[in-house]
Length: 124
Length: 417
Image 1 (cartoon, helix red, strand yellow):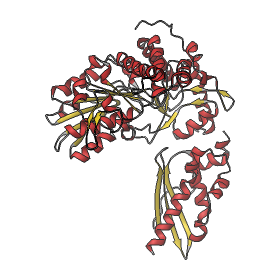
Image 2 (tube, helix red, strand yellow; image 1 turned 60 degrees about the vertical axis):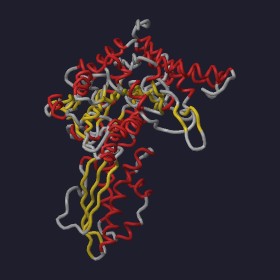
Image 3 (cartoon, chains in turn orange, blue; image 1 turned 135 degrees about the vertical axis):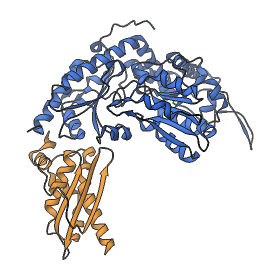
Image 4 (cartoon, chains in turn purple, orange; image 1 turned 90 degrees about the horizontal axis):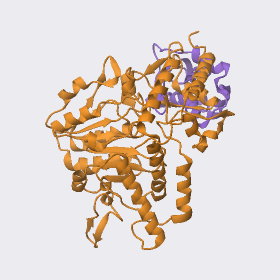
């Protein structure tokens, strides 16, 4: 039950930045087919800084809370700063003990964000 | 078989050492039998005894150990034949698991008998193992894969009304499950098989769940192929069983090639061993096959009438208790007479994965996910379900523990608030 701490449940029930952007610069999606987590993340980037972010998806509390928390962190950051975000940062951000089975759920958001930035890089 | 043991799940629990384990400080409550079943001490002891007293390679040696091992191995084959009422032991092939059995049929029988323009019918209920080999076979042979759908207003039951339109002279195979691992549905196999045979199609039955819960009489069913595995019926992992009608097996080419499946071999050629050994290349899973005999005997002592009755009593109890949780969705046939011991469900607002994690915190093991039946999940319009699956050692106290865990889920996630 330590896994379902207040912050996780809060973000799961009231996710931040859930929705769609009107004019995203880049977007990406991915899923954990083993457990049915899906995430799509859209970013608006101006002057090499993330100005807006939105995510959509469905899945377990860990995957959705992770997406919600991560999107909070992205505003104002450059793609380089975001690329440097490590798995450890995500674990600290969530602040709950993760068994190996739930690591993939926690990291899905980071995987999708980095994918979106990669698409952005190649499209320039 | 006469039921010798009076049915008492509480007493049966004592035969399964693993059920004494504690998980996170709680008694283990094992409700994931559709994934795999636990093993009675009779099976564990037989496995250990084999390696301690008669380990040797089979079919080749003239020394005592080899003779004993060979005899015990073939004895299991006969037991399996009797268990599913096959005509003879030669119709029983041992594979690694049920999945390999489906692949054997696809590669051996399928390659030879499916041609461009033919079709194969697969039910919408199927586990990926009785679907994907046929998808691939159809792709290779430019044949058509047709799906026998579920009823639109009752997605736990097959829409047999749609079946006749799918069957025609080009239908060569119908693949159907004996018991759904997601919904517990027991389709009317005989009806499906009779209709298939009427157009000259063969039938492949997935007995992985069914064989442990309702048993099988393959002669009575008249199915052409029947696949199941040891580990879902109290036996060890690493053994699958393919039953095939003798006349079919005689005409099928081997699946895997190598030692033991040959008679004489020269540098440039080989000829094949008799059925069933034609299909058993290399050293098999000897020890586990010998231990498997004890699992078969255990189930026969309990008896299938009692097992199914128990299953259905537990499903009824589980559904009754689940109905008390607000907004919870249960998936499965409304008619319990064709339901085996599986209950899939979803908690509103909470992903099955989280349900499973919280239940695990109090020692309750259920399965969550798509259960290797993604097409069925699409029909149910959910990405995943939580699933409780019962066997002869489960009782109402196990279900009570699961319900308690679900009440915790409601509490933690403030469901409905």
